[in-house]
Length: 262
Ligand SMILES: [Fe+2]
Ligand SMILES: [Fe+2]
Image 1: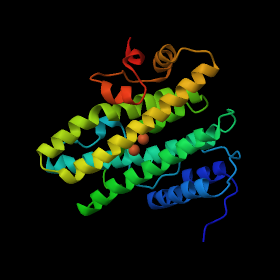
Image 2: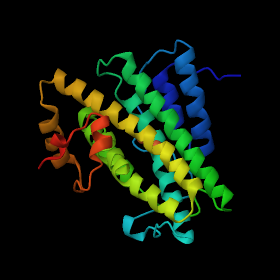
Image 3: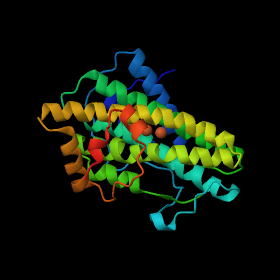
Image 4: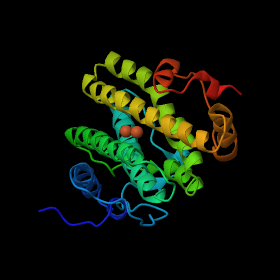
């Protein structure tokens, strides 16, 4: 029986405060279905500063992270790190839904982020199953907290959140995945490569949703998207925008090279 949750925002916060990854995933599927099939109101509910997470993996500094590679040992570290990113991505999507309910946005904004949350849950599940098939599990290795730091830096500013998360961090994944898939195939790991191919296509969709709403808000505030993006990255992004960029995939998502010009 479906549990009654009064609003989309309250249910999103319920997912954010669920520590167990399996619960986070199953609640995500249930909420996405409820949002599409019933007339759930958006409502208002302040999300937590940090989502609830299981006791493991231990969070550590990026330099302490196990080495990733496409060889047999590094592959577990690689898939574990990607699973961690996807679990963060589920929370990032629900955080946007719950945090930005007072921005006077059309319902399609929330439809889009509910779809993203659902796809991130599928990505996490696929990678977690892969780890289990290798007799390991999500939580067995340490992980780092960079994604949530970026979310925190932009917690009350939607335009900066869109610039930083989908348009910079998710876009970086799109830049690097094709090479990674190629290396995995060369090493004979078609199973991981096939999962990453699916994730790659979905992530181009997430980038295009990020770009679409970034442009929408820039129009509202009478800003030029490319200039505003560069300003926000300078102000909020701790790293540097590193080429090579996947210009073809980025262009497909509506993010032309003009955004990346110094
Ligand atoms: Fe994903
Ligand atoms: Fe994504």
